[in-house]
Image 1 (tube, rainbow, N blue to C red):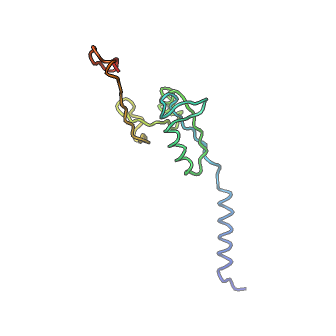
Image 2 (tube, rainbow, N blue to C red):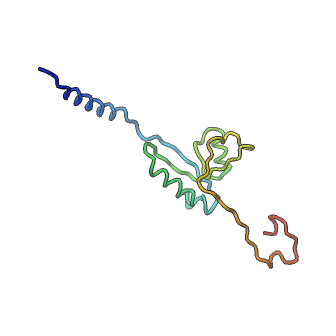
Image 3 (cartoon, one colour):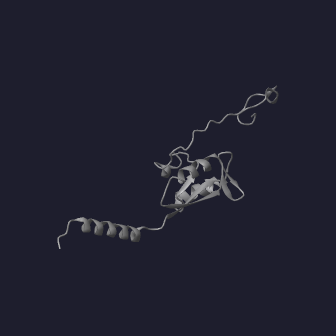
Length: 136
């Protein structure tokens, strides 16, 4: 019987499909920590992460496949300690302070650009010198 090549192609496709199914691993479990005390950007709401950064991160995660991600809110200092010790994988919002935290480079990238504004009524400052931050 003469082989026309079709059976070889079919056999190759079937073997690839079988091996791919066997070799496929479960999703990789990852925990991302969220700053629990930085509203409205990142905060704890009833034990769950919430805020603008949470929305950005979950939108990005919805487009990623192969990961099972848990997001857990916790205090910023505790999250930074987990990252520094290697016990933590990721923490948001990301801030780059390579002078005090050189171990964060090159992993910190901004998710959003914040503009902080202080607002104060004139009556609060009337008759007082302007000292930051006490007068604001």
